[in-house]
Amino acid sequence: MGSNLNIQAVAYKTIVRKEVLRFSRIWKQTLIPPVITNILYFIIFGNLIGDRIGEIESFSYTDFIFPGLLLMSVITHSYTNTVSSLYISKYHRYIEELLVSPIQNYTILAGFITGGVIRGLSVGVVVILAAQFFVTFTVHNIFLMLVVIFLSSTLFSMCGFLNGLFANDWDDINVIPTFIMTPLTYLGGIFFSISMLPGIWQEIALINPILYLINALRFSMLGITDVSIMIAFSIILLFNIVLASLCLYFLNIGKGLRT
Amino acid sequence: MDSSALVINNLTKTYSNGLKALHGINLEIPHGDFFALLGPNGAGKSTTIGIITSLIKKTSGDIKIYGIDIDKDFVKAKTYIGLVPQEINFNTFEPISEIITNQAGYYGVTREVALPEAEKLLKKLNLWDKRDQYSRNLSGGMQRRLMVARALIHKPKLLILDEPTAGADVEVRRLMWDYLKFLNENGTTIILTTHYLEEAEHLCKNIAIIDDGKILENSSMKNFLSQLKNEKFILYTQEKVSKNLTLESRNLNIIDDHTIEVSISEDSDINSLIQDLSIKGIKVKSLKNKTSRLEELFMRLVDKNGK
Ligand SMILES: Nc1ncnc2c1ncn2[C@@H]1O[C@H](COP(=O)(O)OP(=O)(O)O)[C@@H](O)[C@H]1O
Ligand SMILES: [Mg+2]
Image (tube, rainbow over all chains, first blue to last red; front, side):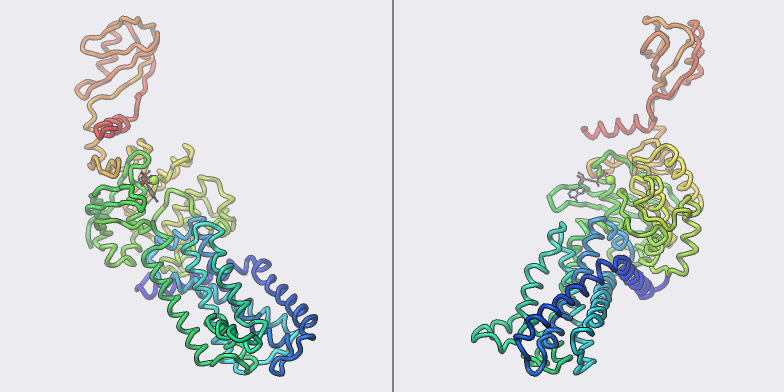
């Protein structure tokens, strides 16, 4: 034991190690399903329906939807990892192991977020590998691609964390996916370019934050986007800052953790 | 270094549903003490411990651990404390050795340092054979011991146990008692809560009795016991005793032909009682203490509080 910083560093590593072991121990539940889901998307949308849709901005339909599908896999699994890990530890009360120890709240948050990010990125990697058989994998700007994936992953890990703090039973952990993530992802232009939308709907689609994530990633991979990359990037950053502040605020007041 | 392991000042707690669980508690526990917080269910023992260990938010008051205010430097204060909670709270899908080394990590102890330490602890607590098993496969007594090992991995100066032997059988309880005594003799300050009165009597140097969120009594165990004026004994006699048997200045209660219940006050003794009986031609075959001494006092204290 040493200085506070030392304690926090060791504690952080411990949480991350535990989180990674947790999802890799159950890899059949955590890494295989996204591969299957995405292969189904590639076959159905890419080969069966995509041929009838034709090219979008000179990309085949499968290639066009791939960045959105990749993003959806990454954020869903980042989210799921933190929300289930946090909620289960509350449910079985072993979160108390953390709560009684000298860990500071930012360390707890960083540990859980890192776990979510590693899960999200692992899923991203297996999805990219599976995609090799179906899409022409192109990268326009690798640095931007990595940053967008990383920041989307942190963002949704934090959503999961927040949902986990507020959750009082198993049903509650599906609130954000059901009411926010799934609709916004589907409406966020995974499967279409907003230029395909009629009139006013183009404006309405722009309110959706996930649209910016998908377009930023599509730009980093294909070089095409419906929105300005600067704006997209600012929005991603802003949401990350807001979510981090909310998580820390609720941790500090002990929401859902300390009675 | 402050010589008090724990100082609690005017601690109150009102839960969010409006229930007042603690009404201004004061306690001071010196370093090296073996201290019992004794009280019936719902008295506020777990609430007090929850607040000390930050699982529960206090409403007002302050707490110092070895001179450090938990509100001012909780990182440092918490490194001094090890907690054995009332309820089992493991990750049941984690092997035992991982439970211990993870807990060490949360306290800033690296795996490399924690592994040999965990081996020592698990061996001492008879869990080493089980180190690779999941905690859900352990018996109740083993789970209790695992909680003790987990609480000790970062070498806390103050070990707090919330009803550590609740539900344990006699053998497990004895083992636990011996181990706690060993720890205390080697310099660990121990606080335990219990509603097993004998447990406190057997182990503790100092006690506080808590009921309805108030401390009713706080003294040394010795002092506390000497407040006891009377003790009740049950005597089993060789000879038949008559229903009308009386002894001068003694209050006998003839239970049946061979059983007498009798109170012995502080200024009397068992020897003279047995003599008195043998004068009447009655031999005592055996005798037993009717209630735990502490229990009797305890009941009296709780009664005074209007229960
Ligand atoms: N989370 C809670 N919310 C409301 N009341 C509680 C809560 N936890 C405990 N209590 C109440 O506070 C009182 C003290 O409980 P507790 O400290 O657990 O007692 P003990 O550990 O001495 O048995 C009891 O009346 C109990 O019902
Ligand atoms: Mg209790």
